[in-house]
Image 1 (tube, helix red, strand yellow):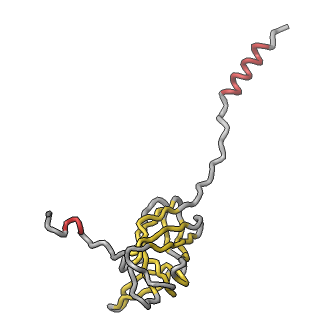
Image 2 (cartoon, helix red, strand yellow; image 1 turned 120 degrees about the vertical axis):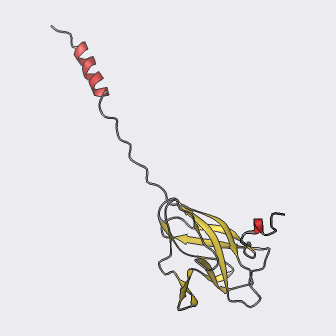
Image 3 (cartoon, helix red, strand yellow; image 1 turned 90 degrees about the vertical axis):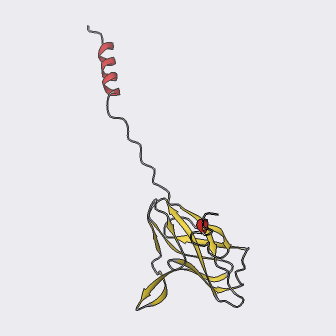
Amino acid sequence: MKPIFPLAALGLALAACGQPAHKAETPRVAAVAVTDAWCRPTPNGAQAGGCYATFLASTDDRLIGGSSPAAGELQVHEMTMADGVMRMAQLKDGLVLPSGKAVALAPGGEHLMLTGLTQPLAAGQTVPLTLRFASAPEVTVQAQIRMPAAAGAATAHGGH
């Protein structure tokens, strides 16, 4: 009789050399980071106001709207030039947020439009904005109410 033990040990050793078991890939959870949120101050009686922020999505997504207690509605808008006239229009399909690429809203371009203001947006205060995305969960931020930062502010005093 031949011993079985050496054959069994060889079989186990060969089985251990096989391909490693594949782990199921965990799907990436959609998330959007929102930074630098701010809104322009509005005069008393204004019905609308503009807000801006920077977005960084972990996966391809779209900003589709939002809400704020300071307004009846929060829409995503763009500014375009047509026949020498600047026009503003709602982005009905939302604003594309490519994965890993920062998208900054700015005066004169894409922005958040608060319509049906319930109160003036007063400089020095903050306003909550709840932002909705096609895939990612809602994000609520506190937007500073302020005037836009001056372009080139660091060099505005000629190096002083």
